[in-house]
Length: 364
Image (spheres, rainbow, N blue to C red):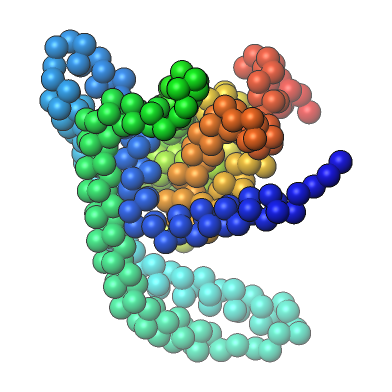
């Protein structure tokens, strides 16, 4: 066996250069990446309307307006609970100080190696910290809101343009390939579109199922704003491995801060543990995993690299684009080893039925 240090160096340099360019161009590329994925999932609806005789531009407009109305309806549905939660945030600092005082008194009584701390000083330091940070938090919130609105607007514009000029873009990309490879390149583009569409469809179904299960569990326990917390956790599940944990931690902290009994936060943790068990073993592999066909190692690396390059947006985007990259690698001989490293051959095997999986989980 031989190894070419020259080719290895060029490969590593190319990888780092691409990551660096992605980081520098994140202001433009993040909305473009979202717009491309949204165009993937809206494409079948637009094509169906065009077959019914609707013009392409109007088909795109009606499709995007329908999606916008659905999103506005969801916003109105949750707006009341969001406003109530924001009003309760005024008492958050006081409740946090009460918890810190309780912890301090417990440590003073039971842990002798820690010097006694005056609870009044804890309260004053906590209030001073909140007052000092409030201005910075407000400024950061306004800046992030402005960036979010700008990115959302650009994503909508990119989605419209990608759908409008999709044939020109497809023909232009195919023309880059050699004539004898254009049919294979066209097939690759079709598979890429299919992977993106199935990913978003699967995630939408998964969010609905997780949001319903979470909300039902929180409602049974008696947690306020169960619908909001349940679907917030379901939405955060689009960030693999981390989003579900964060989504469960938020209502657990809320229950800990607002209820006298510790059984409420413990019940919240139990509900999200059970739902996460169902998601990891049944729902996510069945609904999303089969569509992406990316193994856990590649998913975790995509999550970490995406978070480092594009922040939260990268954590959301890099997983579907990792699946798209895997599809592209399978069409190039030099990149097939990379595609094999990213494949999840386990999920391609014939899976067990729902009843068999449930019996396997709870048999002990």
